Length: 355
Length: 232
Ligand SMILES: Nc1ncnc2c1ncn2[C@@H]1O[C@H](COP(=O)(O)OP(=O)(O)OP(=O)(O)O)[C@@H](O)[C@H]1O
Ligand SMILES: [Mg+2]
Image (cartoon, rainbow over all chains, first blue to last red; front, side, top):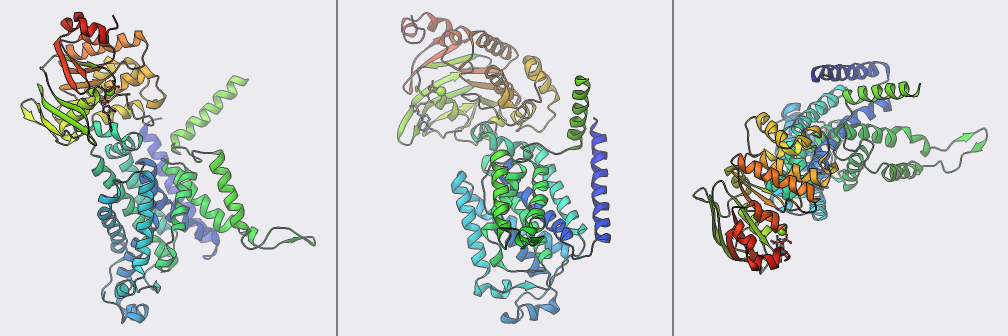
């Protein structure tokens, strides 16, 4: 199929998604769980792809994602709280020292930039480390950041361990969808450019990549900064989604969730990360909810169903996926219009052979 | 073209290369032979700065390139086909080739055609993942990938390692063909017989030092060389 044709079909699919979202928002009550899942799924897709860029495409095993999301979330919240509301938000810190506020998009951009700046600063020492050591160092960084943002002395900026709230949020699902789609689009362009090829070469064989003239330090740092930039933007979106944030909640378990999504979706597959995000969020927040509520069918109390059982089932499902589909649901392939057409054509051919 | 003087390389206190000097004239095929662990690979790696020399100087086209960054050296026209092929297993053949041309910003069309002419096999398999190629095909890919940088000097580290005799013959044919097209070649080989037959100049390396030098034909009939490296 020609490139142009598959581009057109992709564009039509994209528009169809927008229409579906608009229709769903019209039909469902605004508090319906499906809409919450869609919003959070969009945000997690962005963060998962940003992590995949580093772990899946460049082969750098980093566990700092929650830390960069925290930086992004705080940058967004701190900069966008309206001046009039600052006194009430920062009530223990005399209204804080920042007495201006910026528009939403400037705030989101700042989220990314601040996260990228931090990545750039810690990149030099940290990226020299190999595999496990890099993971430990970035995990440590995220924990330090979490403590740092709760530090009392910084309260005039971060509000210490108190909540940040009253910043602008979004109500329509289209907002996180479009922002995430644009960001993921930029990352896909990068992955398909000569930089992306260099990232993959580094992942495959560092020494050979260096022998080809690829500057390892520069490219690793670039991948780290870009990944952190989009994790920061994702953090900003998450802040908007949650309507209030607290540094305490950006635990390492958040990084593990995202890592799981990336692994389930397939290391090195952008569409895999997106699909897995929605599946993950939908199962953990919606589809498996019934497992947490006691149920009686015709006077018979179904055993095991009680609060917390959902987590058990969920862990088992993930273990099964990881055991049986070791390379994730997508491997390192992409879900594409071309691929689907080929799949159906092959199906047709097989049938013909049978007859 | 390439002039190495008094090159010393250490690995954590152990001297792997102990002050060697040699030259590669323009448009020649030069070979470096020697036993396992003699320091041949180390020498090549230090020329492209993958390991930093402890002392000595490396001159290329009249300029001192000792200790310069690898990307700078590649951009100047030296390329290394590393020991053990080291192709990128998860990238396609085409992507592998494009990575080879990473230091260049101009169009790759002509060069792709050039290496596809040299290795028609790679053209047929351009969509295949590098890691799924056969050993011989992987070696072709490693050479083709190096050629994509349009090198003036190509250094090959044991290109015939682990290949069947017929394929080895094919690799040497390619080496001669590349040379005929104006690329200078520095070749490391275990297969001393083939290497010396092909080379204009040969150097024999033993435990970090160069112990003998001469034209390929001279070394081929030298008593000591015959005894140590040709097995008769
Ligand atoms: N990264 C390294 N760290 C420590 N020692 C090394 C390293 N690489 C090589 N050496 C040592 O340096 C010496 C020379 O190694 P080199 O690889 O240059 O030999 P070679 O002549 O290419 O041998 P072969 O024919 O087996 O490939 C060997 O004793 C080897 O053990
Ligand atoms: Mg060697």
